Image (cartoon, rainbow over all chains, first blue to last red):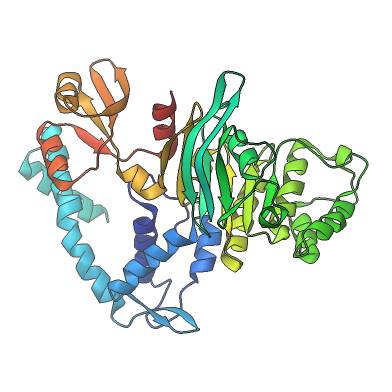
Length: 123
Length: 284
């Protein structure tokens, strides 16, 4: 779990994304229990209402589900759902801002493609 | 629920607190913010009937607090001034507090003292500023009162103890929900802990809303001077800052997709404003 928040986005969104990251990395497996809202609030020092909002967002999207009296679990198929959502966001948040920044720096389209290839080789 | 109606406190001709109308809902954590002299402590003293309003009234659960011990028994108030006899030991104050607050949890108080490294055999006069704050914080947390008023609960606490305090406060709040008002200057640190902001400026209430809606009702715009000025024309803003030809300001309106697009077309940048920064701009 990422413990530091930045100021750019609301905390509940950052919390939700952080849990998604952990699901993608396999820190939280599908159909396994995740930490409780209480533990999240206390450890991250955030208001429980905020933590609840972040968790509920993931419940609404079907990424988490509640087992009554037990706690919060990762849905089966959660990884796939997150990947799909993240891919849709990829264009919006990375490609468009990449093109914008490249414009500022006068980097041509072919230069960008070269850079991507260079990055791939170094990966 | 705490209700303040037309609450005003005047000293001679000076209006310390000016016509405050405020409702504090049950089981929420409020941040009472304001610069030195904004009348934060005056407000807390009025809520607890330590001082009397010049006009207006305070109701706790629909009951006027004026000489009303029953209503005030729901409240635990910690404040800067130390009222405990200086020869008294911490553990004796725990015992004594139990007399007044029957729900005071001595075991919990001792376990908190242990976590914070507070020696309960120490006398009041032997406590440092930081440990005096910790001692009072522990009294409040263990009181099991329905309403906690914490005036500068972090005074003199080191970073480790502040961290521990926030965690214990939240754990306590989740285990037994209550109304908590924290008055502090450490805005950055409490931003995520509190749910609602009460902002006083020169004795007047200028903000009373959730942290989230307060922050999202503003945004920072920055970029080339003339473009920024073009954007600011006809808009309400605060905190104009200039570095060379670069200008930034905090705009007091909700950000929406349409705005973002228009700002983008002007080659300007938009970002979120942090609570502390907003505080500085609004109270300067």
